[in-house]
Image 1: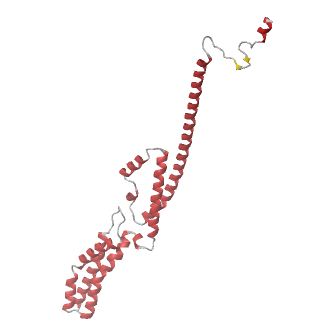
Image 2 (image 1 turned 180 degrees about the horizontal axis):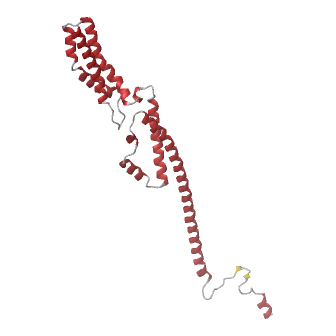
Image 3 (image 1 turned 90 degrees about the horizontal axis):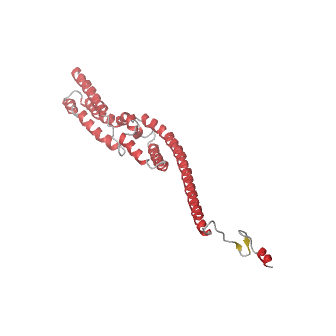
Length: 243
């Protein structure tokens, strides 16, 4: 009987009625082995979380780079026709080229990586849209959109003709008398007066945009005001001497 009782007990290292039997590994209990295993699992989960976060960040950065490239292509495509149009309106090429301080500021705003570059490009695209709206309001039929020389002639030309026309009318009415001579004498300083009036009128009729310098074409204005006056004075004097 004692031999039968001994054989009915759970085998060593087996599974008993109450579940897995506690084993010993050498002289260490099972809990001492489980603690390093738990730490290993926690470290593995933490490493997997870091790996997933790095993979997500890499995907987002790749998307930002691709979006920045597409935005850059759009900005270039919009800037090229604008530059050509501004050159056609007489804007010098140096005014369309960024200055070193502007390049430094732009590079500083892009230090944050592809996301910062994408933001800067979107801001630039907004500026391009605003510039296009401004150019649209200054269509080819608007004198403000003309080249400076042609635009300023609209001011200097009529002013330069006022005094010579008045002198001609006086000569035709009064003949070669003292009135015509007085009109010629009064008309001598008038080119300078008309040029000064035209200088002010150009600034009033065609004000410069913010940050721009208005081109009043002073040489063209001076010649425009001087030539009709000299030609009229010479013609009237010859007519008086001949009369």
